[in-house]
Image (cartoon, rainbow, N blue to C red):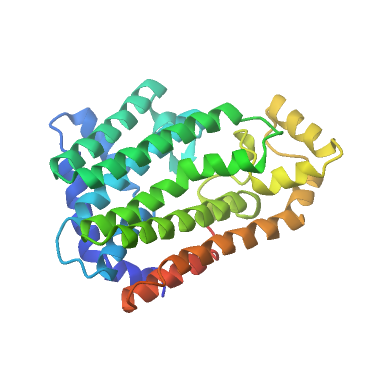
Length: 322
């Protein structure tokens, strides 16, 4: 299984997703069209709608709602990223200038709100209140996660429990809602739908653990954003939480100085200490544990070629570099 093979498998649905997003974002105003063109020109991985489509295929769903709901989840995800960039004062994403860097924050936050509203109004139009309930629940959890993340930014004393609470709300529940929605669209039993939720949830936790790990170990050229950007923005993630729990105060003092003086780079010796820490390996191993839980969640489904892709994907995503 590789990315190009998956892209080929879901190509018709992804083309349908593009059409749906163009329809949903349709406007007769040039300025709004300009904003829409920016997000359509930099689509990212579109992992969440691909997961929805793959789960539908695994379940032998023969309808045509997957691209539409894929577009809904993608718009929600995009709105969250737009709001994230404002909060983090980010200047680049996916190697391009962020909307808030090009426009002002007022325009950017309102455009993110517009995407949320369009996503939910589109879901309402389908008449699928069960799926709409899941979409709304996920959106609420994500916004809660954003609020909690902002509250704990620049706090070097947060616990692992707090870190995972925010991670689940901001990331894992969107993955889970996407895969659960596939079960609903395919009219599967509540038990099967819950297993799909578990698959997406555990995959989402694993994905975010690796994402946080790459902030320490990746490269700017590959990531599309500066290395240690999360730390610059005040986010203390799992490897550092565990290092600080063992710290004699030296690391914490250096990090606080880094924040207070808004330095461009951490002291080289601290970067080396973080990158050579066993806690990076431990975080990767925990990500692997969650990936394995995701695989286990699909064991009750009838194996078919798409099932094999979905059960392989969590472990392969552990090796990603961006």
